[in-house]
Length: 175
Image (cartoon, rainbow, N blue to C red; front, side, top):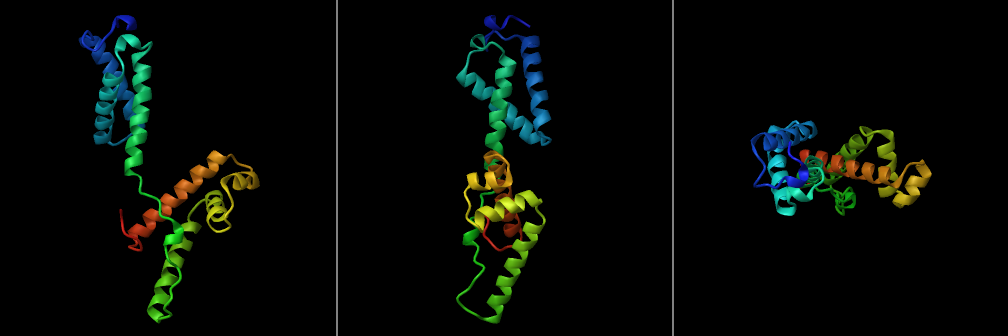
């Protein structure tokens, strides 16, 4: 391959381009099993790289493109991740005490309980400490002796799991 200082997008020749782009695509395949997503990430990575940098400005074009591809994957996943539902919005109580509404509320509560019981103990504890006990992320991290990042990760994943399951069961509208 040519010296990277001599490369620009217009001068990138067959084997140089082929090697760079094949290496990039191989890396992206290692991130996602979905062929369509791999193609989309690859195209978006090349477009973003072309828009933002000349190859001659890059010390390592492949390393830069790999970094861009990770950002693209993150953006794609953010778009496809269901929006979290505020658990307070899922009504478990009703003003009317009709047998039907009581039964439906019991069904909602049973589903939420089932979802929580299927989570790992750490994720369930973090979720309950935050949503039921009202502790801050810092307080939870201190109490459970984990990092705040671990608390954030488990809260997000718990909310996504609850949201998806409630949507699948028809208890909330999909966005």
